Image 1 (cartoon, rainbow, N blue to C red):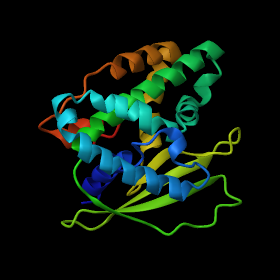
Image 2: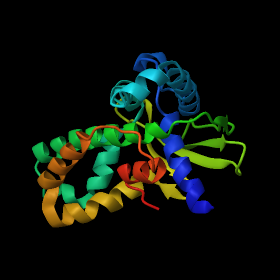
Image 3: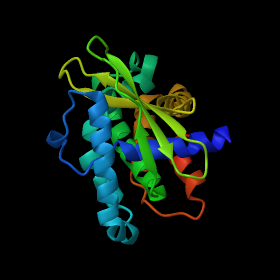
Image 4: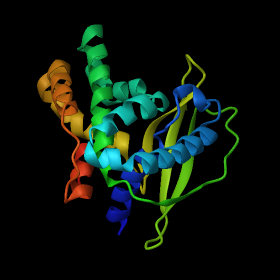
Amino acid sequence: MMKFKAINAVFLGALFLCSNAFASDVSKDDPYQMIEEVSQITFDRFAREEKQIKADPNLLKGIVREELMPYVFYQYAALKVLGNYRKNASKEEIKAFVVAFREYLITSYAQVFTLYDNQKIEFEPAKNFDKEKIVMVGVNVIDGQRPPINLKFKVRKNTKTNEWQAFDLVAEGVSLLDAKQKELRSILAQNGVPQVTEMLREKSKRDIVFKKNGKKDAMKEIGIDK
């Protein structure tokens, strides 16, 4: 049951970060309000564009690129994945990796979005974050047939912009960022940054498709295979 809940929680959590608004429409000053607003706008957009998405699943890439990424601190996440492997890489190689990692995330999340279904969500009460640099924004997913699935969004304050951006999702003990680190670091050790960058570029070119074994295949796309 825990594995099933964790898998569902991860793909649902990805959905909650997406938005139908331009980046300027949702304030990044309050991490709790930001997560709540973009999640609600997300469901409205999927409801409106369901037919188009079913006809052309690659439209999901555009939605992610335009609406999700402004709220994701992908640069920070990419550097966390690189870890100590940055030491042996040039600035140009690191920059290329960050860009490729962003595109890889776009495709990964877009594939996950093929699992979209109508779920009810409840947000945990906001806490004081005045002195915090990282906060955990809690969301409970209610689907009526199973116990609530608890999500924790890790949201970090960008010291350069003073804006809050999500960089990780922890669902039933499963960290999406940790999964990415595990997936890519062994390859980084064997092949180095440039080859992994090229691998990410190729993976980001994959078409988005609705699959019969959707849950299992989508989890593989984001680095979680349970």
